[in-house]
Every structure is written in structure tokens, then in C-alpha cells.
Image 1 (tube, rainbow, N blue to C red):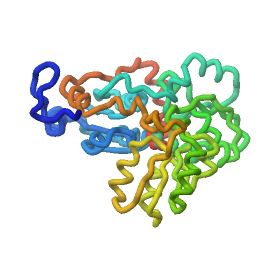
Image 2: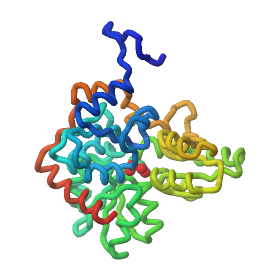
Image 3: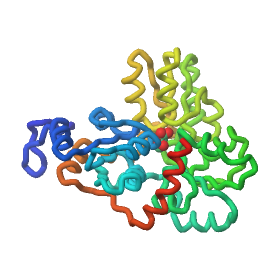
Image 4: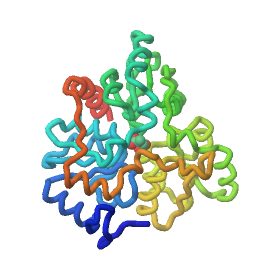
Length: 322
Ligand code: CIZ
């Protein structure tokens, strides 16, 4: 049951009007709220900035007046903001909001993988821990991976981690032969090509929008493969009226808001009862936690200064090349 203003919470205190309290605290503390497209709809609606991880990093790098950044997303996004804004307090509503893809690439194992490929340039997807970023030459997001990989000669020796599906996709469109780390995202790996094919029969006019973290068969079936920002832009600019969307469900909120006259159908996962096109980490953030985070200025992202310095270089290189 939804908790509403006027209700009494478990501690016996009145429940605050969360939206107004968040806006009040934000103003009082000179805070900026940034939200990823995969956040719950009500958090997207209250944010100052909404975007993919590239846009959020670009905005964080340019923020002048904010004292506090509340990054409503997952932990690695908060770390990226902290590296780019070392003088600001960076908060995240739930410190447990991790990332299955980042977890699929432990720092020690990645260090051994890099050591086993001497002479290779290390390209990492931004969905990695700060430790993996510190081992990386240049970071990419799904929005700029192709462009950045194409800045390297065709025969350059490249390592790409941690997402094997994005890596495969970039190899296929750039003609590169990057050595891939074998990692994946629990949401994007779950979409079922068979169920999507069935859905396409029911909606023959629908365009299939696929995130490159999905498996190869989906990439091949897709009308468009792209980052959240690319898929959103396509949906807005297209004359088509119906879309099947194979990425985390949070993006459907912006799609529907931007295109109220169009229909967006979430792509079905293998197990239709699992709710697995909701990222369990992204959805840990709630309005209650956002309010508490602004009130208490906790939890805060803290990064070791030496690692932050090492991670800054590949992040800045990505921003220069984007
Ligand atoms: O890089 C991001 O923001 C993610 C996780 C997805 C996307 O394509 O925007």
C-alpha cells in the first residue's frame, strides 16, 4: 500500500509530504538531483537533470554552483560524479544500489586479464567499479562506445570490458576484434528472442528498440540498437506509433511522457513472472530514501584519493572524445 501524507509511519511519526519536502531541502541545501533513465518514475519527475550515464557525467563535470549532488542511479554513477566533482558532496539514496555488470568484473581478476594481454589498450564501459576504471585507458558508455573505439586504428590491440554483448556489438559495427571480458547485465541478458518474435506477430507494425547490452540475437532482430538516449530520440523523431522496448523498464516513463500518442511495449523476459526488466538495484532508490538522503546528507560517496586520481584520466579522456 502506498504511504501518503498524513499517514503515520512505523516509528509513530507523521509521514511528510515527500515531494514538497525534497524540493524544500534541495533548495535549502543548494543541492542538485540527477536521475538516470532507469530510476522510478517519481524520482525522474523530481530530478533537475535526467539522462544516461554519459549525459549525467557531462553535466556533473560542468556543475558550478551546487554544493551537493544527489545521484539517483547506481553506485558507479555516484563514483563517476565524485571523481569529476571532488569538492562536492555526492550522495546516493541507497548505497546498496550496485550493478550486476560491474559485479561481473572484479578488480583483481580484471587486473590479471589486462596483464595477460600486454600491449593492449584497455577500453572499459563506464558500468564498472572505480578500481576497474583505474586500470582503464579510456572509458565509454553505450552512447559513445562506437565513436571512441573508431578513434583507434583497425589493427589496434584492444581489450573491452566488462559487457560481452556491448563488446560484440561494437566489434560487429566497427570491424574491430577487441578481446572481450565475459561480463553481462542481469536485466539485458534476460530478454527472450522467442517471446519478442511472438510479440512482433501480434504487433507487426511495432519497431523493436534494443539496447546493445542485450544478446546478439536481439541485436540482429532490432530495428534500432542504441543507448537509452538513442532509443528515446528515435522514439520521439520516428513517425511510427508502436515500439517494443528491450531495455530496463524505467526508460518507458520518458518515452511515454515525450510521446503521449505512441504505444511502448516492454519486451518480455524469459520468465514472465520474474519482473526482471526492472533493475533490482536501480529500483532500490525510492522517494523516501531520497528524502532521508537529503535530510541527513547520507549516504555519501567516498573514494580513496589515489584511486580517484587514476580513474579521473579515463573518464576525462572519454569526455574529450565524446
Ligand atoms: O550508460 C548508461 O547510462 C546505461 C546503463 C544505459 C544507457 O544506455 O543509457
